[in-house]
Image (tube, rainbow, N blue to C red; front, side, top):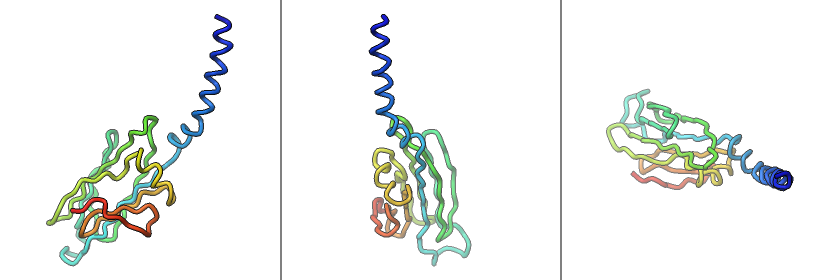
Length: 144
C-alpha cells in the first residue's frame, strides 16, 4: 500500500500541473459579448425601441432588453469546465422579423473571440445578424 501512495501521489501532482494552464483559461477568463442594434430607425418613432433582445444560457436569463438604434448591450461570461457554455438570443425587430442566434458557444468562441479584447461582437442589421472577431470585418452569420 505504501508503494502505491509513493507512485500515485507524484502522478496525481504531475497531472494536476498539466491541467493548470487549461483550468486557468477556462475558469478565470472573462469573455465579453456585445450585441449592437444597427437596424434602420426611419420607420420607428423617435427614442422608441425597434429591437427587443432576449438572451439566456442554461443557468442565467438576462431578460428582455428593449434597444433603440445605436445601442449596445454587453455582458460577460466564463467558460465552464466541460466547455459547454452557451448563450443564445432571440432578436425581434419590432414589426418586422425575429431570429434566434447563438451569441456565445464555448467550443467555437473561446478561440475566435479571444482575438479582439476577449469580445464577441454582434450587430443586428436590416439583412441579418452579423459577427465580428475584430470589430472591423463583419460576417452575416444569421440572415433573417
